Image (cartoon, rainbow, N blue to C red):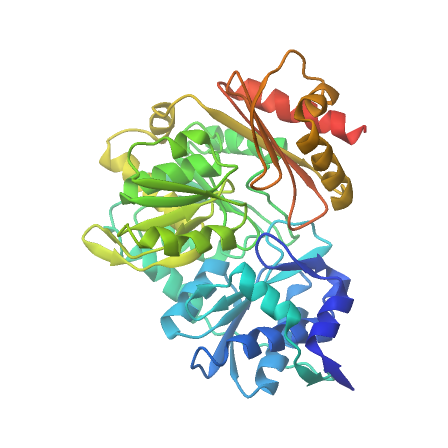
Length: 475
């Protein structure tokens, strides 16, 4: 049977979110996966010269079959497929960039278990929103898949990724440190222990499981917060490291077992790297925008493609450029020098770099991670989400809020508030006269409504998010 990629993609119901194509597992049929691969490769083959395409997956049970269909499509187009098995997304992207070939990552990142996704990378890095539209609109004719290939793992990507960081630091960097690694089902769990041990740390493996765990580093569950505090005391840990499902978003805790907000981690990493210019989503803590260490801080929509798109503008007047998101994923937009060694750009979310730079920064400053965080201006963020909340309901709510933000705040139970600014860069971000901020936004990856808040203390920010989401869920 002859199929057309744009028709198959449209009929599948799969859509691009903040980073990659996302949908229900049953929507990612072999032909749907093939259609995405055909359209992606067809769209870049005239611009880049390559003979192979790399593929990797996360630990979701549905990922291997999706990889098989993707690889069959790659081979049907006359290219070699290099399969790296289960590795972090940044490991796949970095290795493919060094080989100057495109790559495809099969992952749903942190979204619920019944969903999955696909991320695409050109030889020069993660695709843009324009590239996403090209994939959707490209019309490639292909034959319906009838057989799927055997998956044979090449271990090169995991090794390259680990070497990227072990070669950057002195082998004694973490001597005397006890580091816990919350492994769960992370795609990088077979890499992290040896990586930290090679830098001198004593590593304790924590809660490895064969059941997929959809860790969301931007809305950490209370149970995971309690786990970190308990582990820190039980094992006398100096640091806890974890990631989301595909290993591109970090989750780290200092000596007290308290998880750091991803944007605070990104801020400290950027200071340690002495980056000149930053691109960050509008949802990040406002202290970053006001930090005197950076020449320029550009605010973008939420999602790594938007952050990456801003790098070109920043690079025109700045030598070193980077970005990060509130989920902690760090994007290195230019080469930088660390310990008199060149660290090559990696313009996609990465979890290991910010973790190691934080540890290195604390050692250089001869202080604790807790003290580094405490020294920052007192502005606190919190975020959470309502799952299984129809996107249309979210959009209706935001439309109401844009037309009359004061009325929406009253519906949310807030009294005697004065709106000082309304930002619709991405969702609805309302600033109040007392400097408190509330930000509502439908997720780009799943039917969820996210709520972010910023205030002078954490308790106020958390209370605002909790009460807002509780009220909205009852609308």
